[in-house]
Amino acid sequence: MNEFIKQRLKNNKLLTELRRKERVAREQGNKKLSDKLKEEILELKAIIKNYGRKPVGGKSE
Image 1 (spheres, rainbow, N blue to C red):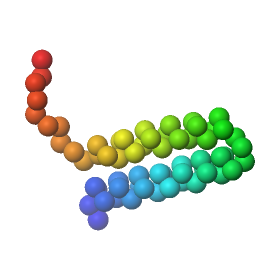
Image 2 (image 1 turned 30 degrees about the vertical axis):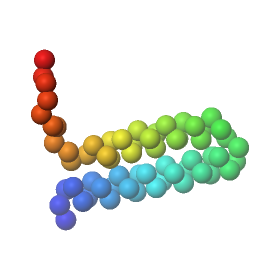
Image 3 (image 1 turned 90 degrees about the horizontal axis):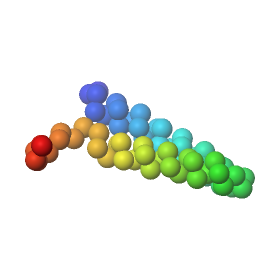
Image 4 (image 1 turned 120 degrees about the horizontal axis):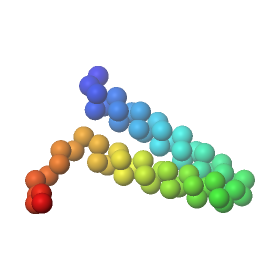
């Protein structure tokens, strides 16, 4: 298996685990933890979205 696929599976596993923890926190009424986990989920999704992309040429000043 190549590195890209391995990394993607690892990221998806992390994302699933964070979503599960966030849902449990929300159901228990722990809004502070739920909000913190939502932030982490958004950060991880942004990282995943940009993973493996090569930088696009632009103005470098």
